[in-house]
Amino acid sequence: MARFLIIAGSSAIGQATKSLLNQAGHETFVTARTEDRITPDAILDASDFDAVDALFQTHGPFDGVVNCAGSLLLKSAHQTSKAQFDAVISASLTTAFATVRAAGRHMNSGGSVVLVSSAAARLGLPNHEAIAAAKAGIIGLVLSAAASYAANNLRINAIAPGLVETPLTKGLLASDAARRVSESMHPLGRVGTPQDAARAIVFLLDPDNAWITGQVLGVDGGLGVVRPKMKV
Image (cartoon, rainbow, N blue to C red; front, top):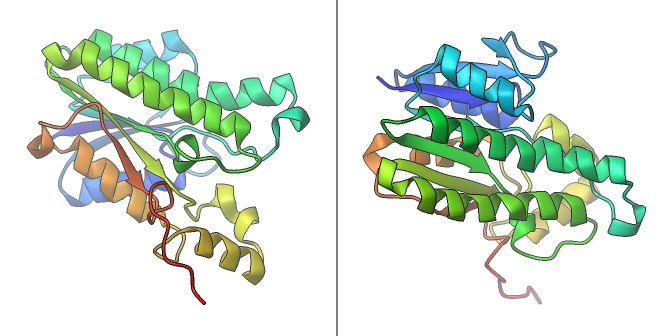
């Protein structure tokens, strides 16, 4: 049995990850920013470097950690305020950096860190400027941190989901027409589920897959790399 930390475990992907890990017999320690949706093991502002570091020190050791924190802002750059941009960067990139920083300080026996990027960081989608910038930063962080910590057997990877159906994305799928458009963007013809993302996270956390680091696994129905034949 391994012990895993799930940051932002109140998210749909976080809850699905916890469920899969628990079903496999592993122990999970879950944080959330508030208790609105779940009763977490700890309340944590994951953008606070000192708070994340203290959590690792107090509640560790952990065999692996996943950071599911993030936000959603769909606006073009000229419509985005500095406050909105700062909030997106804080929710996604700052929390990811704080997680890697604490893991590097405290996971001295190695293990696995999994971050959540986005398909939007690897292809151009309109009105995704802020979120694409934050999630692309996570990809750069993964590559550099994987190099820094490989000698310590600390693996750093990420998943890059396409559109996943969660409470956060509910508004994007509110109508049948909107759902059809979203589904058509993904070559496999559907949007993702939290379980799709969670299965990939669990794969990267698994010690049996300990020869994988510095990778960004697309879990996106082919959105990031595939252009299917046009239907005529």
